Length: 186
Image (cartoon, rainbow, N blue to C red; front, side, top):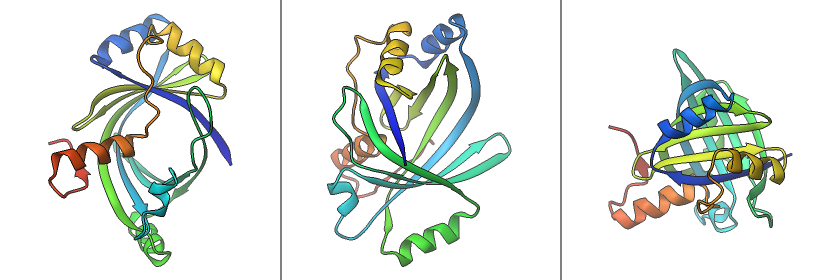
C-alpha cells in the first residue's frame, strides 16, 4: 500500500499558478476531466472512519481510464498523509455491480477539471470543482518535498486544507440542502 502525502490550498487564479510553474521549468503533463463516484455502505462506515472508496472516470482528449481507489484514514502529519491503493479497471458498470454486491452504494458524484503538472519531484494539480472553486494540490514522496514546492510556488502562507474534495463537496451540498449528492459543470 502506498502512502499519499499531499496538501491542498484554495486559490483565486489557476492561470497565475500555471505561469509560475512554467517560469520555474514545470511541465504540464495533461488536462483531464475527472468524474469521481464515491461509495459507502448503508452505515456510512467508510465516511465515519475518514476512509474513501472511489471509482474515477478520467477523460483526457479522446481517451478514458477508470481507477478504483481506496484511501485509508489520515495519519498525523502537517500535510494530508494517508494509505492509498489504486487499481485500473476496464469497465465502469461491472465495477459498480461488484461494489454493490459487496454492500457499497453510490453516495457522492462530482466532476473536477484538472491540469496535471510535474515540478521537480512533485506532482502539482491545478483543480477546478463546481460549487467549490479553484485549488492547487501538491503530492510528493516526502513532507519536505511538499513544503519545498509550496514555498517555490509562493503558496506556503495560504491555509492548508486537509479535508478531501469528497468531504468538502459533501459539506457544500449539505449546506445547499438540495438533497442531491451530485455536482457537475454545466
